[in-house]
Image (tube, rainbow, N blue to C red; front, side, top):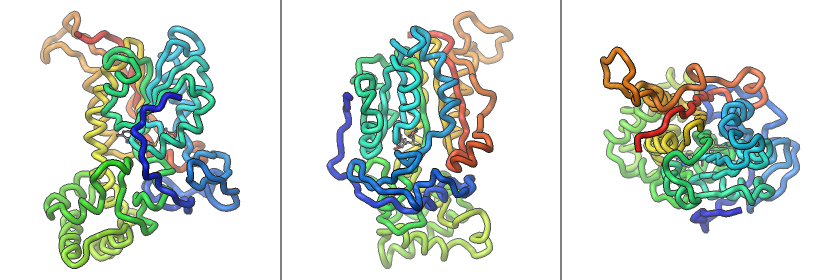
Length: 381
Ligand SMILES: C[S@@+](CC[C@H](N)C(=O)[O-])C[C@H]1O[C@@H](n2cnc3c(N)ncnc32)[C@H](O)[C@@H]1O
């Protein structure tokens, strides 16, 4: 398998903890004890130095709406050959490679380019996809680096790709590994970087941003109504002791959020942790840049599917997709000017959700919103 990752020397090592913090990160998900929880009773083994469990989903992350993704993208991937020969799918969020494995299995001629900013995810996916290695290229990059990743694989940035898949957010492996600092239910360094090689950590933000900037992050990215109070508490507290751990921050949030509010709306740390994670990883900026690049990269007849798990991301996808399906004729004209028809058409009505059976099997699918487009026209250039 070709692997253009700038690989990290520092691979985190941890045992696999309880699934609770994972579920806590998906605020709309119900906790349903399931034989898919990487939990009790399963035998341990080691993969890439990481302790994992011998369970029905051996790579720890159950792909969400996998069949729907296959149904939506396959028509674009089988235009030249029913086995996918001649077609290229970019999985922009490879994660544990669950979706990728499904496509590579069902379409034995398909080529796949898998991107992820997390080198540990790439390691895991590389092992999972080893049997398809002659058809897979992996790249360690943020997905807004799509054009460069395509160039490295010999594809143009425009109209060269048949399918694009984005399965946004963090993976179960990232959440379940306490030392990454994503989960508020376990004490760990206040880190939250999806790419351990990037420089900004959650501790940097909490210890150095001024009060107004902190409040703004909590309000915008966490939709936290006590943003101002929390920011003021953080600034007071850090003057005495800088924050280094998730537990310190959780303790402060219990103090800062009034008791009646703590009893409703989920864990009091949920929104602050989401906000810091989004800021640390520039998740929204990366998405805003990547979706237009992904649309440009699709050939006519090509398709894109995006799965979003929180409203801030889904709003961005919804807005960019509505622009893509809108007429390009000057506003106010009663007719479509020839050559100004929309370049894309929608394949979904609004956002699609997981059904009750999938949520029962995989509670992490509860908040998902899936949107998909097909390219129908050539660009100007
Ligand atoms: C929900 S997981 C994907 C799971 C995958 N579809 C599967 O079935 O195993 C999301 C992955 O996207 C990666 N990711 C998130 N934001 C990214 C970005 N801006 N650029 C590249 N990778 C990103 C994360 O590191 C994580 O591994």
